[in-house]
Image (cartoon, rainbow, N blue to C red; front, side, top):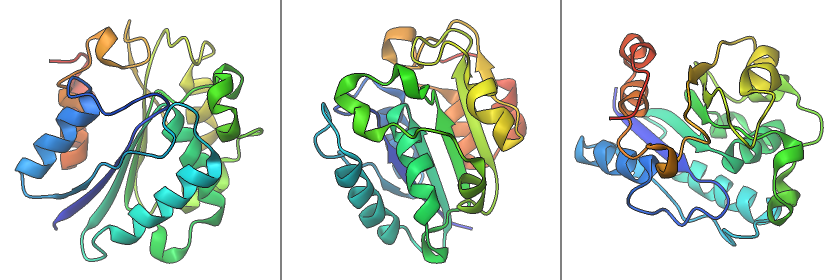
Length: 198
């Protein structure tokens, strides 16, 4: 089955070429997949209204005949958590990767409009037909408690924890990232085996 990808960035991420999401988008496009990698509006001071409207527009562009895959990083994870409650059947996706989802309390004031309050895993699960995967660090400054306790355990999944990976950004060595590419390809076993960026 062909694949259709939506890649969503976090706050203050202007899609620099050295970021693993930029690299992933290019790799997937080279392989012939449909890849949507939008610049979310007001990147440095986003609003939920602006980001959710963009999300809805992008979901509508995913190929309905393909496997529909969403890859979120950082604040985009909270966007998905909030938007999930109103995802329609047509907007549901087949797989979801959440990388470095921040804790609500650690979201900077510039992104406060994306905070979620109490995390409800039920609509998040309902919005995805297949696998939900979380990749995180053991020392993310934006989620000191850890994404396993904060989000993965309520979702009844096990997070992939990357030691010393920070917020999983270029500053912690995450440009080319084989894990993201292997998971995107659907190669779950290989994705589990990868423990570091290239």
